[in-house]
Length: 452
Image (cartoon, rainbow, N blue to C red):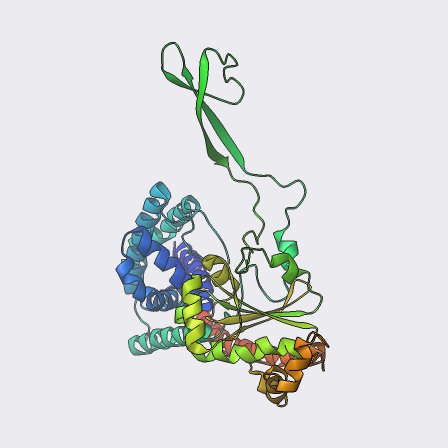
């Protein structure tokens, strides 16, 4: 029985560690999911708590998993695990029955489960929880109390800092379909032979003699139009088919024209600034993006796009207030939040492939990429003098050309700096995981010594 309890602790611990880690990597994703919950349960006034809850809950789950495996404070941890699982099992049952939110978000974007799948997953885990619960009095508490509580506290602080760090930058591991290296058009394609959505269509006809309405399927609807009059039809999804990872990538200009094909087919570089909510975006980043937008004048292999889901009237007001000299494309808010977890954030495309991805804190200014660019941009975008204006009005030329450089030559340095930052993030993560693994190993060796 001792080994069954050990196996139960390891299984539960690994599930909690995985669940907590994927949430800690993407705390904003957890915050968005909690916002969906609050709205579904009419608790929208608590939306300001979504990010703190996302950070604290991810740390709680991950640390709970670690303490279960290490065997720290078993009796109280078994109590906590029991009530934690009871609460979420009941919650997922309610979600499965009423389906107010389609995805519970228990494993973030790393593993998407339906509400019923999540509920049955919790039922299976409850078996292991009950094994520990009923045997809790048999567990000894011979460990050093202070050392174990200090260890739990240190774990919690470390995981919370890791989660906050991911919030301030971009997720260290991107589980969404817009990761660096993704060819967007390929992720939008429907593979040949994959199942499509299946609908059940009901046709409603009224009998002209009796005045009663009856329902029919597409196979048995009445053909006698003198006796039956068509009233309505209803379609219900009975089986969901395959859905491409990217199925909602759409951006429209101010005239309502779709611009996605133009962006994805551009053989040059397209820098897209994304702000799902312009009113909450970092103003300094919006202003600095103006230099990047004017870089189009200097490089013929570079294009700049700004995208938001904010209403056009609010966009105009904010643009006028901040003096933004670029136009915005319109897109769906959820799609923009999925592409990048920053407001604003930046992605660099070439031939429809994502070359780089940055949060506003990490994205360089044009001066940081090349110190001479600001002066060149200023000269190129300066108003024409009187003589040049007269020549332009006379039709001598349409406009001056300032294609004085190729943006392509600066890409290696730009992406190299981003690669260095990613490696630094990897070192931080490796350091944290290394400490956890060493502690797990030391506790396992102590366990072996006790049993020999």
